[in-house]
Length: 157
Image 1 (cartoon, rainbow, N blue to C red):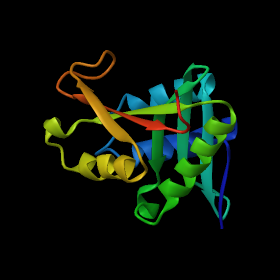
Image 2 (image 1 turned 60 degrees about the horizontal axis):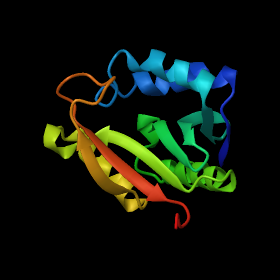
Image 3 (image 1 turned 180 degrees about the vertical axis):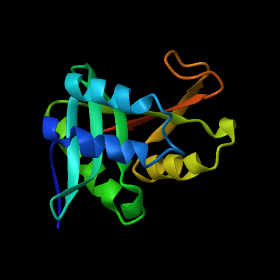
Image 4 (image 1 turned 30 degrees about the vertical axis):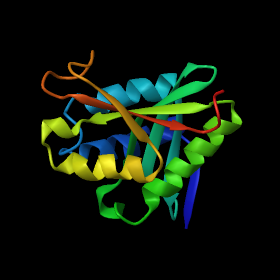
């Protein structure tokens, strides 16, 4: 049975394991960054029969805007709708808290890195719209252009 709940301190080891089990998506410095962001921002975990199967971390950028900083699903559970369940809950909670737009950054297609084709397709299927590429993005390793995606949760005008 799938459930989504707020991320708790006791979930950090499971979240770190998910990040470490996805080396084609996350560099070796990411577990520490995720742990830091968990302590500063809102987080959610998706559980499958009680086991942490995915997570998301979002930062408020202003009263009406948020950014999903991190989101991942355990590699053995990918492609089965788990990410959709998690994202829909995150977006519902952000909208209920007054957020109008949500941003996501991911590796841009110009990098030519195949694993991220599915990532960009996921965001696009979920209504996120590509708006720009930033290269270099401060805080990202050189040679990793950032694709910026935005989704509106409600009208902004």
